[in-house]
Length: 257
Image (tube, rainbow, N blue to C red; front, side, top):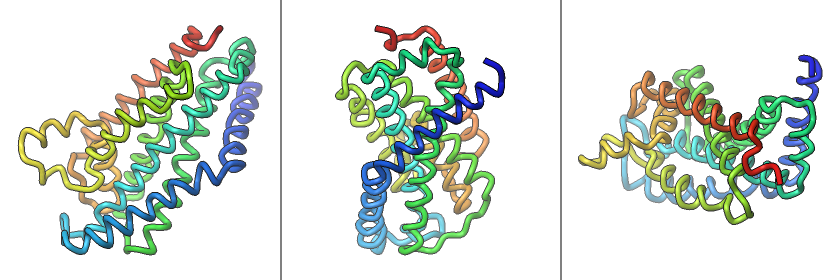
């Protein structure tokens, strides 16, 4: 395929993913918006009024970046696992594999669709947060780049999960037993500086902590981790997971019957 044909193929996959997201918006966009509204009401309003301030911000302001990042991560991951596993289940992924489309185009199309859903849900949650608190973005570049990198990282992770999944139950194992605990322990609802040792040190092994911290630093200027290490972790994960995903796709692992 020449470059123009590859762009057409990429655009086709992305368009299909976007249409899928919008067609079932009641499943892809509404549930996270409702869930995060409950988080704002319960944690931000009811519990936050008893906590006071963190790093000079109200508790509601402090947790908002974490809740936005949590919604981006879970929806980017969930979108690509369900979509790509659906392609495996429907057997039309085999048609893509035997087509002239390069594996990078196939991976790029699915990842782009997942990132778009993650960012769309994140924007909805951020808009909802404005009904509960006031926010001022300190560094727009850090804010945008950190949320984009986090979305790409977990889209790639979701793709790998979908490749190895053999039944629909398999795509729920990682979110339930790995992703959810890491998210809740990633500094969404608290500052890692509040933790005693050894838990503070252990928390630094959680990659989500670096993503939440970078995004919070971009929005509020109150991150727990320096931006250098945070970006190093995100970029490193993106490169490693991207290499694994494209290798699995080229070899057809779990894809060819």
